[in-house]
Length: 465
Image 1 (cartoon, rainbow, N blue to C red):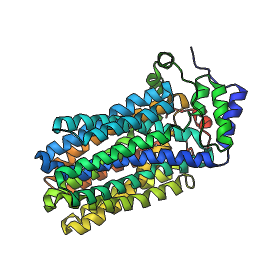
Image 2: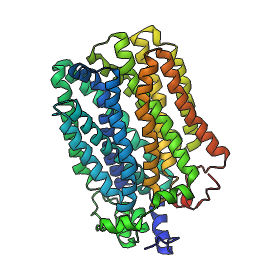
Image 3: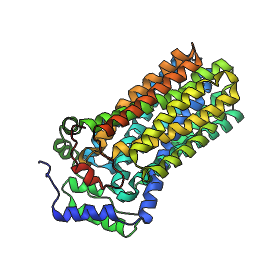
């Protein structure tokens, strides 16, 4: 079966209706449920950083071993983003965003009972695969379900649940590690995180399949029923009928090759932005347990306080990005935040010798800028890919980014052991790379997506970019 080159008029009218709908209860519910899952992703990501001090004591780990724990997680993210991104385009968004939450919920719960370091590494890998799947499925689904004029803001609001999840993880880790023995505390924190994730998957089951994906799969009647429900503001919609897995995989063979041939510039932009933010962001979070904790001789239960301060800064930065994307446009917002983060890290490097207080404040301020950067970046490159390839494009971009995330803790540990300021300047270089990437995109005629329907973006000529 071959994909139709263009939608018939009835499908075009349906897509126009979906793009121009007024915001209603359905959109609010979808943002909240996707946001809750994203908060849990952040909970999971931040949690490992918060308990690394306790794990270091429990397993007798050095800085390289702690980097391996982080790297296992990032490798899982890479596998999940790339593999499940392609599956989301083949099998639908809904299947993947439900399965991803269940996978990492089970893996996180099982981590609470990890008997040894090897089991911990395997479970962190599986948890990372689940969260990596979330990256592609959620970003694709939210872009395809909300009105065009609100798409940037809605996607950014979903991503803004990340600081909330980070704050809860840091607060919970601080309370538990301060009140329970370290050997028990980290297990309790992981156990609670797994239970909450599985509960969120139960509520998310009410979200529908993307009508745009259904139309692309020649299932206009299913799409029409869902659009009618969205237009009516219904918050519980019946799932569309399932398509055999083998049929969908056969139909979408070669989708990554098509993405590379037809949209190389968009793929390069997504990969560059994600590599820059992942290497810079996760390197910043690895900086605290791997470099700051041993240098300042801080106890493990003090580390969550740094993350609490960082979460407050992240919330401010994320909200700022959400307010700017649909006002001044994607390119200015992304480029401005990436450049500001690079400069902020250079300034942060100048205060590292002043003690724990200035480091905590510097971390909060830089995290404000870093969070604004990636919250602006994800909607920017996610919407550039056509519906049939959107999750694959997101997944491929995120997979490249996770390479930077996996390498960054090792680089931070190596450079930071010799010079704390040098490690931060290195991270600034990653963020500068992202600023250069969005500048090149615009100089070469890359499209500015603010206010445009997804179908307009798909139809626009790539013009070599």
